[in-house]
Length: 90
Ligand SMILES: [Ca+2]
Image: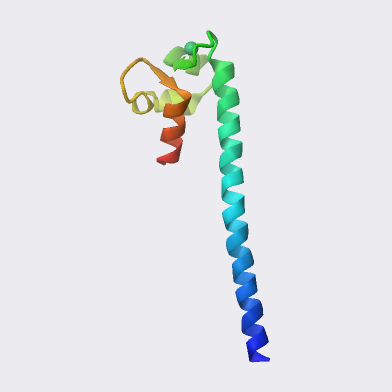
């Protein structure tokens, strides 16, 4: 009886761990897909780089606010990779 009880507790714990492991990447993938869609829409000259003005006009407020931090090379534009790196380092 005691053995069966502890067994089900372990099973429950394992299920919770699996749920948390599978849910997190899905949320991150959604965020990345949304970011990519916004980036592409805001990159009006489609050069794969987002200037501060493009980010502003595209309504990417988080990018505008963190622009200098994301633009680690000081190029005056940010790339999708740089934004992703910033998001992952949060
Ligand atoms: Ca551009």
